[in-house]
Length: 221
Figure 1 (cartoon, rainbow, N blue to C red):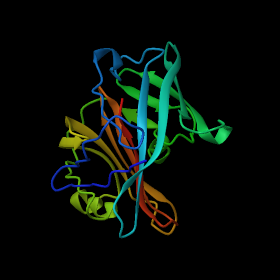
Figure 2: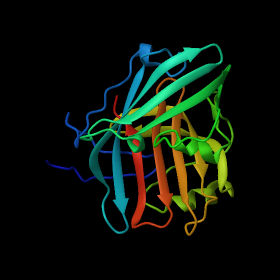
Figure 3: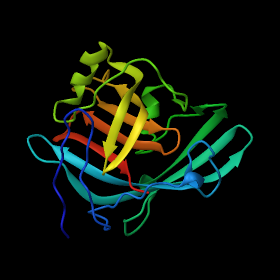
């Protein structure tokens, strides 16, 4: 199977245009019924995984993840995450995420092992769908992601970027979750983009004890 290599970011984050296969994923723009604000049982989001090793181009691994809402009650919504292209699903290939609902704020009820929601462990489980008007940043993955903190002089913040382009889709007023406080010798940092309509657009992890400079999960459906 062919894997496309291409990664171009100057002022905003841009990914390549893709075809409709697992390793060359085609972005499908979500319709209004998939709004992250509504959070209805049965809603599903799919993500493709990519990795970037030091001094190499990023590449798609061919792995995809599904996140589906499996239950919702007053004040609580439950997401179930699983890998789609494994021969035999094990407990390590799934994660259940419980989020309490308080108006435009979702609160993780306990730490989780989710690949997509894992960044919340760095933010005390706090996920806001409100517009953030502080900590404006410009995203450039051509440089080390630890340098983003130089724009705000903060290693841990919730901020925003005015424009974000991923897989030829354009998003505006995107909330940015950034955590570089785990030093490179200790743990992975995280960078996540959220839009109230599309939900989590991308979860990226970087640093840590690994040959991997960064890796992430990007919304494809």
